[in-house]
Image 1 (cartoon, rainbow, N blue to C red):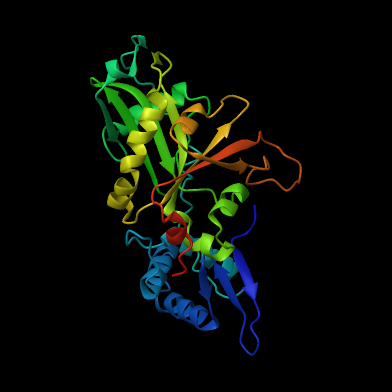
Image 2: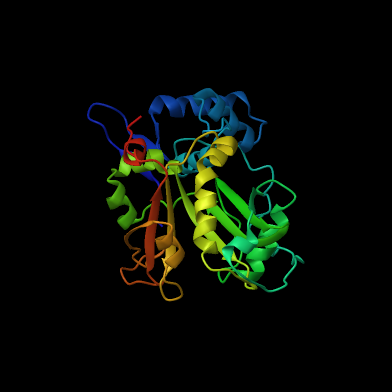
Amino acid sequence: MRSKFRWFILSGMEAIVTYRRRSVSRKDVATIKKIIASHPEKSRRFISQEVCRQWDWRQANGVLKDMVCRSLLLLLESKGLIKLPPRKFTPANPLAKRKKPSKVTVDNTPLHCSLGDVLPIRLEQVRRTRFEKIFNGLVSEYHYLGYIQPVGEHLKYIAFSHDRPIACLGWGSAPWYIGARDRFIGWSKRIRENNLHLMANNLRFLILPWVQVPCLASHLLALNRSRLSQDWQNLYHHPVYLLETFVDTTRYLGTCYKADNWIYTGQTTGLGKLSKSHQPLLSKKAVYVYPLTKNFRRELCHDA
């Protein structure tokens, strides 16, 4: 995986490191050293949070960028620029021991009918609600990719017809680099790094296997995209302007995305995030996008 930091030697100036769009000067390193020296008994977590407070380094929703800062501090220590206090304990890795979502019981009576018969459909955003376990369990059991806990910003939806769940849609942060998508947008690497959070990726789309309703999938996409940006704003305090999805064409034709007027931009390379080879390791995916505003390029390419 490519590293997200860079070292620079600036003419007439000292070396700095840039990590996750944050440039760190020698003066910043001196500030970190002072914080460590002033709190010799404090934990690394405290040091990280204090650095974030002094830099006002926060996410869009105002939360301190604590975990990013901890990674930066470890990087600076590995380069011999700072000396962190000893670890007070080694926390368990919650991802390594994460249990598979529990099975859930829902009405699985076969539903073979027209779209009009399942209307009205109630689309519920279930992230951080009592319904989230139902979403996790259904996706785990019935989606061919299973359930993987998203990292970073994400939303989860369940579609209900007459109070019974019929589909699940999951959205999350967009991948760091997708060539076909990035060429379509036309942004530079630096602007992409700054504005990638203004996109959302359709991580999961599941219509439950006993539900066979023509045109339901494209109808659900339209319902979801019409409210997604506002829901993102409500939870994460910023909108999204462009949606994307990847379709495994060895399994699917992408018919519902085409019916909902998503735009085909090309294919993924099939290399995967961790590949060190130039040979495809994964199946190539078709890349589709959907602009949520006609000015999406202006918003995504804005250089703050």
